[in-house]
Amino acid sequence: MNLSVSNVLITGGSDGIGKSLAKRFIEAGSRVIATGRGEERLRQAAGEIPGLEIFANDIGNPDEREKLAEHIKQLMPGINILVNNAGIQRRVELAADTAPWAERQAEIDILLSAPVHLNHLLIPVILANGAPSLIVNVTSGGAYIPQVFAPVYSACKAALHSYTGTLRHSLAGTACRVAELIPPAVQTGLAGGNTAHGAALEAFADTFNNLFIEDEIEVGYKTTENISVEISGKPLNELFTAFSGRFPVKTYKNR
Image 1 (cartoon, rainbow, N blue to C red):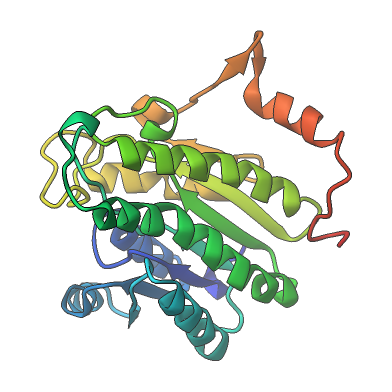
Image 2 (image 1 turned 30 degrees about the vertical axis):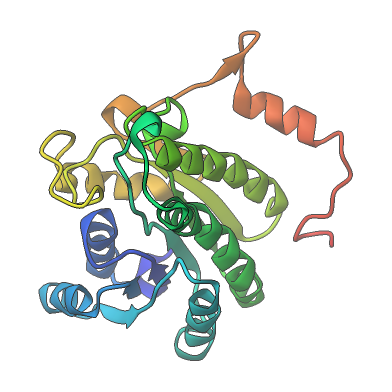
């Protein structure tokens, strides 16, 4: 994949992991549009990263996702890389969570509904270009080992991990690869403040190049590197491949 001619959309690109990835894509010569809810933070990111294009957008709102897709079709019809990175994390244990349901729903909407919906809207555009392309879904180590202090977040990331496997199966045989980026705890503002513990942000973002290794489908760092789930001694990915082949479902290649 030639990053010097790539067109990239990164959700949640005003800060943290998304911003660091945007910087690396631009350094490689890519055109990048970053989205986020806070226009001021987006402008600040654009000021720090020359060439970064921005679009203020609430990815948790389905109407806003439709609006974003139309914006991309108009301004970046040659999109070939989509990074579903936007996220929030409520650190509230289940037994103590007395917040209104709307707060949980917001987590679900941003962490799970948004990437599923945005992929649905933009995959036809990506495939129509015919160029080597990539969808990156950003999950978490919490997708594999639930974090008791962030139960809804962990559940959404586990669901996104599952969805990513079926998306990869659905796009097999096309020019579009699907990779899962699996951060451990990283020093970002995800939970509403700077996370003091965890991997240094820039060190984690150096995993960027691993996303473009052809056979690399799950990219982690330190504690999330080489995560392997096994059933009866067999890697889950292998079992999924064998099992999914038993069902004649339509894919993007043969629909």
